[in-house]
Length: 231
Image (cartoon, rainbow, N blue to C red; front, side, top):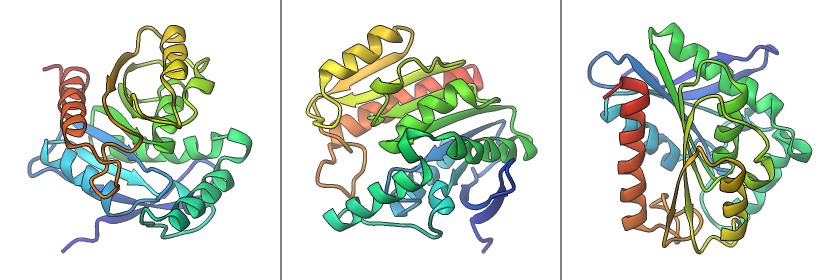
């Protein structure tokens, strides 16, 4: 069986691992999957696998490799504290510019495989990275952000592609007031709010909400079909 992990080289010569998942038949569209603060763990790999089953070539870059390699955390309090520390290490003082080089390397890899249009989806910290990538990384045609921590504070970063965003109304990290401020600054974003908490998409977390997760995924698949496949 072929190893699903490959090595990417960013434009600053940093090398990082990335998990890949291929569809059963050749795809003309690809998706970059951006991790939470827990690394490219089994949940993020399952997300990539899920989109691959829908016909997309997927890649999940290990953006924590700049601080520590092979990070795949669980969801305990200790894991969360370690994840926060790693996030601060790769994006000190909120500067995610190096992380965006890793995203660009993932986009370039998809293009090198013959993919025409590229989407990006990210969760938690990955949601913020996805939002920033939509405005600063070339070659992205559609972006889906899930409860991106820090997105309201980065509202001035304008997207260059279509964006969909998912938030939970019980998310204490992202109160609805802040979500509203973000949407007021970016009314073009296709924004959806669910009766759910932070992390509602992850079936390995206590905050998992099956109804919200399924609804958001259906909307995301439709969004990607429209913007990446023209369906």
